[in-house]
Length: 304
Image (cartoon, rainbow, N blue to C red):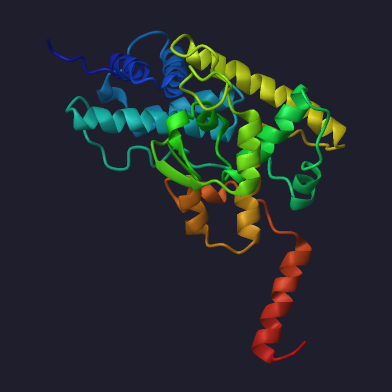
């Protein structure tokens, strides 16, 4: 059977493949991209021959007219670029040099989600047991202690991923393998949060019914966690609400403030490049920058 040389049919095949691989989150992003392209095309297929720099520019302008943020536009463009490269590899699309050069595929630093060490220390104070807020507090600290592990990865952790004090897991977003040593503080939190259902393959109980609508269960658990974090933020008097992302951004920012190499931080987080990691960093304070300059002058000119 001859393969159709249009982007829409090819994307459908890719999305189906992701679903079969058990990657519904990735499939969802590609499906959103598909829907946007289909809307832009007025419901007709897009032949690969029409995927040109001018078409991409027009599509970007269309997304801007729909009031989308630049990061959202970048996501759609990067998904299209990934589909295009796969189509080129399969001989369905003509190879065009720097096809996506004229559209935005970067990542803009928008809302900062990192919190400082002071707030993290305040989060060590227990709340009344057996409440949603106390569980959210413990879980947030655990995410931070496991090098800012994403919620989706902790939700799908299996019991066999943890052997002694070593946690080994594969990031669902990038496929990167990570190994984390469980520190004593994290071990205590794992003991209190782990699933008591010995029949479940999962380490935690975010997915209570394995094999049945697991992605929906994960999404429900994530929404519930973020609701509790929002309430916890109010309890702590925080103007900016905590979210599941805050632990990851905070770990990266504090590691950067502690002067660890950015490449080391990037490797620890399973990022594909240092450029991705840099979007997590919070800007240094003016006082820290002033102190740095004073230190440089003192070193060069031998002054105090």
